[in-house]
Amino acid sequence: MQYETLITDFDNTLYDWVDVWSTSFLAMLGEMEPIAQVPRDELLRAIRSVHQKHGTSEYAFLLQEIGANRLFPDEEREKALHYAALGYQRGRASSLKLYPGVREALLKLRSKGIPIIIYTESLEIYTNGRIIDLDLDGIIDVVYSPPNHDLQAQQNEQISLLGEGRRSLKATKHRYLPAGVTKPNPEVLRDIIAEIGANPATTMYVGDSPMKDVAMAQEVGVLDVLARYGQAQHRPEYEILRMVSHWPDVDVEKERHNLQGPVEASVIIDSFEEVLRYFT
Image 1 (spheres, rainbow, N blue to C red):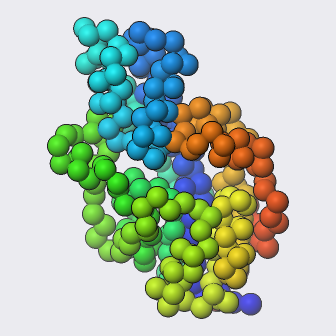
Image 2 (spheres, rainbow, N blue to C red):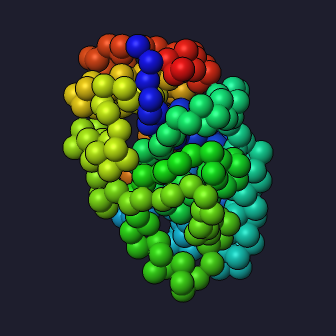
């Protein structure tokens, strides 16, 4: 069967989000830890508290809040945050890149007139910035993501030390999901399909999570495709993410003990280019 619409997850499906996050975070932590007045475990707990407060494991103003918590000596605080920010920015710049074959596959789909839609849980400020940095603005037709919650108001008041800033897409359209909605959410996926005027029977959904992506796609009745190359739960750096994640403890444990989930994907791919065989 030939398909006419592609809806894809973004993080760990088009690029290695875990690598970007861990490289940036560990570089930042490496600058903060020697100067901190508290042990590493306490520093990580403080970071997780900020992430949970704002509902994201990427928070543009993390260093401002950590600095305000008096975790560093007064005379070292400014230096610690400055070098932590530089480490974070260098880590992000060195690790942000598309998986092999993604750009070529997306361009081929675009040349065929296939609508390409991103549906992600990442907030607008990070999603749009990465679409721009990955040179996908105009290749992706529409991106759906949650709004920035309190980030917009804060960004009007101060500059992010982590170098994150709200940037506008020029060609790709951005549409908001309801605040606080997370995957799997079949109703959101149904709404996206209806809004773009797609036919579920000829729509493909690609994602890296059996629990979030595959199960949701199967419930909606679109072709579910598991991006096995993007699964990262077994990697060592993923444990650091769990330690500072905004996820509630119950979700961390659920994800830890159900890495593959009970759902079997209809299609499993080991490179993104494999989706091309399903489109004329």
